Every structure is written in structure tokens, then in C-alpha cells.
Length: 175
Figure 1 (cartoon, rainbow, N blue to C red):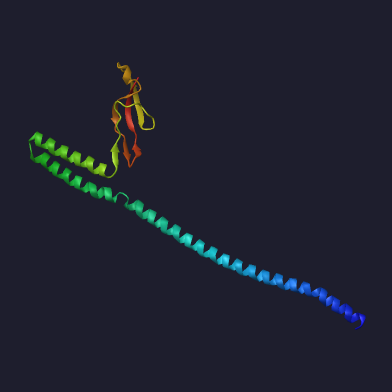
Figure 2 (cartoon, one colour; figure 1 turned 90 degrees about the vertical axis):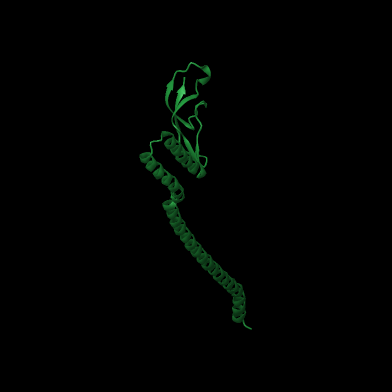
């Protein structure tokens, strides 16, 4: 072997690890590209699934809003029928006691129907004034010291629906 061949062998041996590194890097790059494509595909599917979920949820919310009062209205139809019968009796009967009893029954049924749907009347008279539940309309002087800062009259009743305030009590407070 002459010197040229020896140098060529040495060069080939020196280049061999570089070729191996290049092949390993190319293989590693291919693996990473495949992983990236898989992750991209997963992301696209997940995004599409989420987009479908949002659309479906929005549609259900709209339907719920449109029919939210349906159950309450249906239950109130019975009370409406009773009101119609009571009105008819008002025009046909002169017995004031019978009319009062009929109207009392209708009002009781009306209150019970609303209570069955979660409506509760807030108690106010004699209670300590609380701005979280009451709206003070005015203050009046009281002779009884124990009634100072307490509610002496209720102008409008307050109501809660399933333990959430839907209308504050409008009250008169003693000072």
C-alpha cells in the first residue's frame, strides 16, 4: 500500500462515523416528523370535536331558553281555568260569601302552584333591615324602641326562586 491508499483509507474511516451520525440524525428526524404529523392529526380531531361540542351546546342552550317557562305555564293553566270559573261565578251569583270562598281557593291554588315550582315568599315585617334582602322605601318614626332599625311595613313582598332572590322586599323601616 502506498501512502495515497493509506491516506484514503484513513479518510474513509474518519468519514464513516460522520456518515453514521448523518444516517442516525436522518432517522431521528424522520421519527420526529412522524410524531409531529400524529400530534397534528390528534390536535385537528380534538379541535373539530370541541367545535362540534360548542355548536351542540349553543343549540341546546337556545332550546332551553325558548322552553324554560313551559313547565310553569302548563302548571298555571289549571289556575287560569279556576280564574275563568270564578269570573263566571262573579257574574252569575249574588252570594258574597260564596264568591269570597271561591276566590280564596283560587288564590291559595295559585300560591301553592308557584311554591311547588320553587318560589318562596320572604318574611320581612318585624325583621331587622338587611340591604341584601330588603329595599328601604322610607323610614318612619316609631314609639317602640325595639322596632328601631326593624321593618314595620311591607310595600311589596320579596321572593326567592330556588333560594335565589328574584325580587327584593320593598319595606318601611322604623327609626
